[in-house]
Image (cartoon, rainbow, N blue to C red):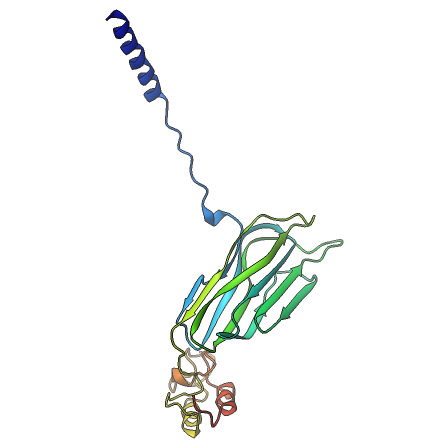
Amino acid sequence: MRRRRENLAFMSLILLILFSIPTVHIAPVSADETTKLYVDPPNTVDPTFFFTIDVTLANITNLFCWEYKLKWNSTIIELVSHAIHAPAGWKGWVYDVVGADYHWYARSARGGDPPDPLFNGSMSLCTYTFQLLDVGNCTLDLYDTILADYNITDIPHSVEDGYFENTQIPIPPWDVNGDGKVNIKDIGIVAVAFGSAAVDNPETPQDETENWNPIADVNFDGKINIKDIGIVAIHFGERV
């Protein structure tokens, strides 16, 4: 009995010591603080006839060069245009190749004396505009990615693909009135709104929003001008 009381006293002492030790909270490392290369937005579902994505770099330090490839399903979506970007002050080498279903983009800062400034922070590396071709889904696949510093040492990073899906093909914007035919009626709608804009320019005497008609903005640039007339003219006579 005495030994049992001694054991209980010993266990009580141990528990008292354990509960007296201050708790140490280790804050988790936020995923946002790690370097990553990703498709933005991550999911594109049932977009308009034309839609855009970016390949974006986040939270990089001492970047000297990069390389990546982006692949998509060219039977579902078609690349209409792309705009490559670079950090301020970079004048180095560029590799920019587009195929039917991929883009291969590499860029480096200029070395030498003095070299271009290394990049720190986050930025879009390229903006892509796609056109819908068919119903379906595909991965916007980022692969063969390289980020490196001035010593050509790899910079660890995560990669996040994008995802595209559409369940129906919207009416193409050049069928302005949506009747399934591209004809003089569509040209007329654009002509009536010609010269208008979604946002008024205070430096011009007229109110540019007065005749604004969003369906006449065929290329979605916020202005109705000869570009919109031209797009409808190219598709004149088509049935959609």
